[in-house]
Amino acid sequence: MTLVAGLTGGIASGKSTVSRMLVARGATLVDADQVARDVVQPGTAGLAAVAATFGPGVLQADGSLNRAALGALVFADPDQLRALEQLLHPRIRATIAQQVDAARRASAPVVVLDAALLVEMGLHAQCDVVCVVHCGADLQRSRLMARNGMTADEAQQRLAAQTDDATRLSHADHAIDNRGTVQELALKVDTLWQRLMQEVG
Ligand code: ATP
Image (cartoon, rainbow, N blue to C red; front, top):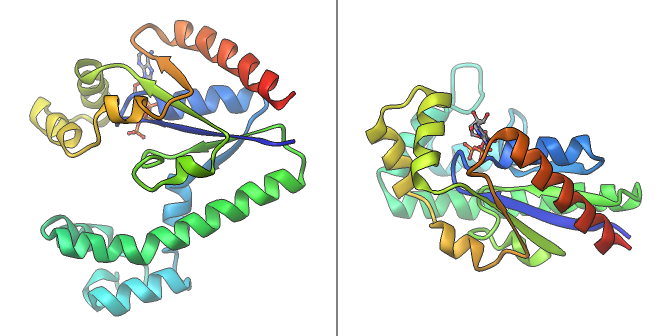
């Protein structure tokens, strides 16, 4: 049996750090961020659909996606954002399902589906368990500033645009508190890994 563990958390909560630690312990990673980039690579039906809907201005001269131009369009207009999500989310879901199936066929014991929008996209419904990393808004802000060189205002804007921890945690089977050091996080991930392996049976 393959256990599919959804992994989510707010921006800069530590999702990637936890998923790297789980992969080091033997998990197979399905990275929703990577899939979201893959479905709009040059030559894909996804990129063709985006260009057909939003116009050639969202393409670079070499035919690849101009993320800044597309971002400027959709973040200024919620209807456009919804239109983009309607185009891409089904493709992202289908590719994730294919990758999970491939891991099942390879008899992977644990698949970690790392997805910032796990709950928002309804992906949690396809997971056997949901793991939520959290560290509170103050630490998210300071880690975001340190990692991305953002000002406090920029970091705050990113946080304010997101679902809150309480909503995510209401779907959690396993909550991972990342308010401590990375070493403390590693010990928590050891415990989580043991629990996941127990659930595999
Ligand atoms: P995003 O949502 O932007 O993809 P994320 O949730 O994947 O972020 P990480 O990139 O894992 O978060 O962590 C955010 C930053 O905080 C990184 O620079 C990471 O090295 C650092 N970090 C993670 N956990 C800790 C910790 N316990 N103590 C200090 N720094 C940490």
